[in-house]
Image 1: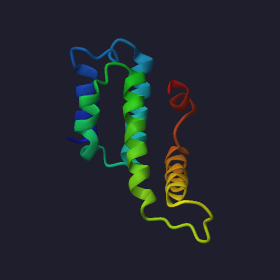
Image 2: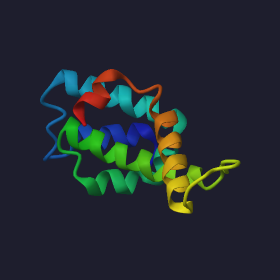
Image 3: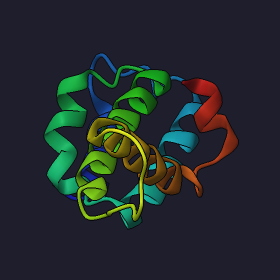
Length: 114
């Protein structure tokens, strides 16, 4: 499922409230286009659909969960030299760094909706 099919499903589904509001449709489209360049949305399409996506806030929460999952995967690639603390603390720090790095380009309204 590519991003156009995903957008079409998001806006035409019976329970979708995105189609009722032009601002929500515009922001959802903007968000999908923005995240499609950094995340392979095709691999997460099933997760997005299973979350419900009935309005913009639910879509943002689902996409945020996907960003957190990706941050956990990316964090495994990093190693902190001379880290003083437990392995758990190091892992949390690396995950947080990757999550913040992935959220840098997201618009302000994205954080406000969470």
